[in-house]
Each structure stands twice: as structure tokens, then as C-alpha cells.
Image 1 (tube, rainbow, N blue to C red):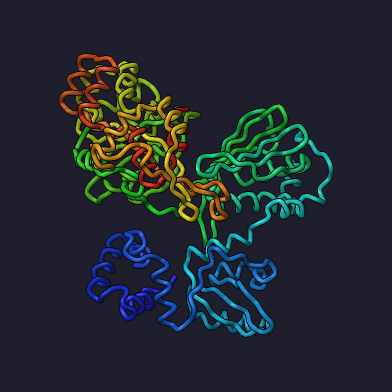
Image 2: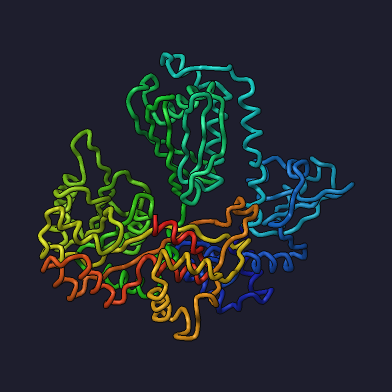
Length: 578
């Protein structure tokens, strides 16, 4: 990235921002603790393309758009990967006596001179964007299959897991095995995978990554390497090498200048050997705002109003892997001020947060959510976050904490916001306590976002509309779109609305999707709903009151995002109608 000094002179001199605008944005960036470049991009004030295009004009070099460029492997490899990563430079074209380089800093003269001497070619500098450059850097890691074929071709034909501890340690320290595991971890980080599955079959080992919530096959390894790979993961996670009959859990970190990723490891015995699942937690990931998570204006106002309350419960609900913890951490980050004491009891601690007292449950020694919560109440807390309300005891303590002047944040496993209320009653919490302590309930799912590099629009045909009507109440959804001013009242029909999808490109691995965002419903417990809870009203009565309140449901929120080109109708139906 450009230095702050470089950036200031470029933006002002090239007329991208005035001096006054620059100073204002600089102050805001400092307040948020981010660089000026990151701040301008996050707020969509100036794009990366505009910044680096202006920089190219400023330094009188050419600007190059790399995203649609196919670079020959022999040209790419003229610059070794460590140098390309460290100096953020890429070789993209070469003729008889000239090597064309894409860089982020045109003043890194030392590296350009080094390349001139190393290649014997005249170096021509072009400027590109960090996004462009990072996409091309991934080309060093293309051909995972070829990489593994090289690593595994020298391995013995068949081995079993029934080995002594010493023999397994020897296997785990075998160089090809270390390279297999390192490569698997590195590719998972580069591909933004959330989980790695290493699954033994009868004659081979299947490796799958979960990317944007969907499992994908990435590699099949020979069964001969299975024992060594599992032993290597056990060594990294400080687990027992010679234990093959019992499940084991551990964790380790991978840290380098580019990333800091924690791996949570679960090893489970299966019929064909031990299966390993590794959950990736990126500790460098930037703190998100509620807007970035995907909350619409109206639900956002409800959340902001309720998190300012000094006591009560904020509950986030949804299935496993629906982003509940991320939502809670985002709310905690807003509430994290020096004048409040925040305590969390989690299983496990997924992200470390400064100035927050985080504690992890340990059932082996009897330290569960209930005992941790009870202890935290003696620690003079203002805000408490409980990872999950799983049982009556935890629910009782959480409700009483909310009633006695604490703000309590927690998660539950229910399908929507309304069914959370009967779920608490099922845990033997008196209905008057549920009514008086619950502030808001947020229900959520995660959907894949359309890849913006290959997005296209289309209209629904008659057959598609008929199929859609079988699954959802289109009339009701249309009414909500009108109420939320997403479409013009009475003027638009479903077949005239534009929807969007991704055609599939190299950037999104031909899937049409890149990244994920939440779809939500936010239920505020107002006087009417509170009265119904106290009367133990049935779910259908609660739903009527919620509809009257004008709550946007998960499905309706999904349709708004599909209509605005953020996700697809297929994706909304996949996560809401499963």
C-alpha cells in the first residue's frame, strides 16, 4: 500500500480530493484506527482503482488492470514467490529485452534494480491495485493437484494407522508429510476456507474445504499418507499420537507477515481411520460494522436503540454456522468502552478482543456456562456475553442477571425469532420473566454473495414464477417490498423485476458467488408482544402481533437483498427452505 505521505500528495495534486476533504477523512480514519486508504475504500469515497490510477499519473508510469490478464507461468516465476509477496510485485509480460512489472510502490527502486541484474532485462514499471495484485499472487498456488502429485509420488504404497508412538512421530516428521500438511493449510487460508475436512476412505483420503458455507472436494490423497498427515496434525495440536480409539480436540496457530490464523482441530475415529476437521479462525480479520453484516436500516435502528439499554437480554438465534457469534462480537465491539466491564463465557473463544474479559468453558473440570456465568456475576460486570444458552440452569441465571441490572447477550438454536419465546418457556423460565427481560431477538442465516466480476441481470419467466409461488407467498413478499420502498407501489409486477446471478468466472472459481452476508429478522419485544408472552399465547398469535409490528422476516430480507443484486433467489430459498 502507498504510505500516508504519498497518498496525501497524490489525492490532492491529482484532484481526487480537496485538502479540506483529505483532512476530514484523515481525522475520521485515525479515530477508527485504520489507514486513510482503508477508510476511503470502506466508506466507498474513493475506489482502489481511482487511488492507484491517480498514483500512476502522479509518478508518470502506466496503470495496468491485471484481473482479466492471463500470465504465463514461466514469466510469473521470473520473480520468486517470497520476493513477490514481500515487495508486492508481479512480472506479467516479457519480450526480448524488457520485463514488465506490476507494483504498488513505484519508488521501491532497490527491488527493481535487483530484478534488472537478476534477469538481465530492462524493467518497465506499471502500477496496479492491491486487489489486482493479490488475485495474481494466488496464481503461484494454482495446480494443487500437481503439487500433491510431486509430494506423494515417492511415498510407500500402503500404511495403516496401527503404529507405535515413535513410528508415528517419525512419519509426522517426514519431509513430504510436512509439505502435504503445510500446503493443505496454506491453500485453505488463500481460498478463505472456514473448515478443512480430511476424510479417510477404504483406499484413499478425501480432502474437502468449506468455502462460503459449501463443502468442495479439493484433493484425493493416497491412503499411504493418511497416518503421517494425522500424526502431523496431532503434533501441531499437542494431542496424543498413539490414541486412535477416542476423539481428541486441540488447536494451533499459523503466523506469518501475511496472516495470523488459529486452527481448531477435532479428530474422530471412523471405520476407515481417523477423520480430522480443522476450523480456521482468522485473527487478523477486520472488525465489521452492523451495516457490513447486512442489516437493513429499520432493523439496524432497533438494534442500536436496544443495545443502549442498561439491562435486559439480546438473543441471537439460528442454526450452527449462521454467523451468530460474529453478530455478538460486532455488538460487543460497539459496546466496548473504558467505562464498562464486559465479561464473556464462551465455548470456544473464537476471537480475542481487547479490554474484554473472555473465559472458556471446560466441562472436564466442571466449568460450564452456568458455573462461569454465576462466577462472573461476582466480578461486577455491566455486560455479559454467554456463548450459548443450552440448558435450564444457564437460562435461569442469564434471565436473573438481565433482571438485576446487567445487559446479557447470548445465542440459542431456533429457526426464527418468534419460536425463541416458546423455547425459553420450554426451559421452565416463567413467562413473566421472559416478557420483562428480553429486549430483542435477532434470527439469522448466511447467504453467499453474487461475484461482482461476473454478475448479470435477468427477469423471471412464467415457469420460474410458478415454481416460486409453490414455495413462498409472493403476494405478501411483494407487499413488504412496497412497504419498505424497495419497489413502486402498484406499478411493478414480479415478471418486470430485475434479479441477478453470477455467470461464473476465474475469480469465483466458476461458482458465481464470492463471500457471504447475513439475512436477518429483528424482533423487538414491545408492550403488545410482552402482554402476549405473559398470557402464554400460541405461536400463531405471536406471529400476528409481529406482522402488525412490521418486522421484516428472514425470507423478506433475503428477497430485498436478491432484488438489490447482493445474492440470488436460489440462495435465499436454499437457506430458508431447507
